[in-house]
Image (cartoon, rainbow, N blue to C red):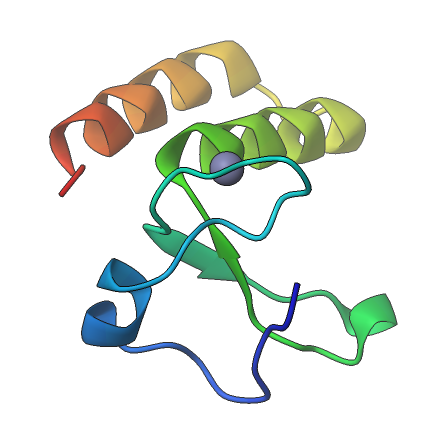
Length: 80
Ligand SMILES: [Zn+2]
């Protein structure tokens, strides 16, 4: 697990793996977290979706199920 201080480009993401422990899928998305020094971490499509589910349910966002369903469809189409 490495991460980066600046955002990854699409080209950089395409050539690397997801940073979730034990995952070997190709990276597709990225995120950063204040408590993690805002280091950009690479995520595969499945883990990006899982992170979104966790955050939306934690935040108790109104309409989260419908929003996640729409987002899941976008993620499914957006794979490379
Ligand atoms: Zn992953």
